[in-house]
Amino acid sequence: MQLEIRNYYEVLLLEMLSDEGLLDELPSDYLADLCCITLNQLPTRYIRHLVDTYFFEDYNELQQMKHEIQKALEKSRAFLKNNTER
Image (cartoon, rainbow, N blue to C red; front, side):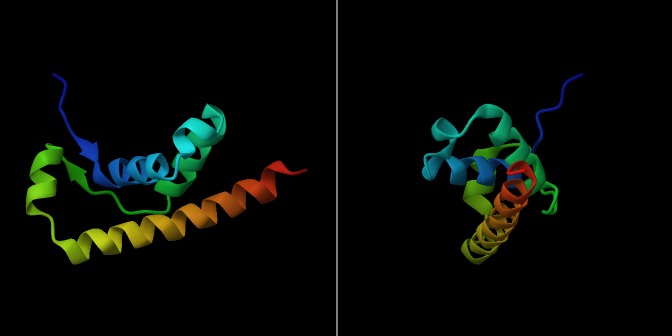
């Protein structure tokens, strides 16, 4: 049996990277590492249906989640920069 569940932080992170144009700009290996490192810093929030989440989510909560993602993304970029420029 396959369940249709996803981590909402993953959805938001990919949306953020897409909005910044990074999904097309960055190499896929780097992008995968960036996503993994970023998501490992964040809590999980599992969802079944994205449309339900958009309908029921609180605006302030969404903004807080996006802020958490942005902070984790900045730390991840710095980590990768420091560990790949050797």
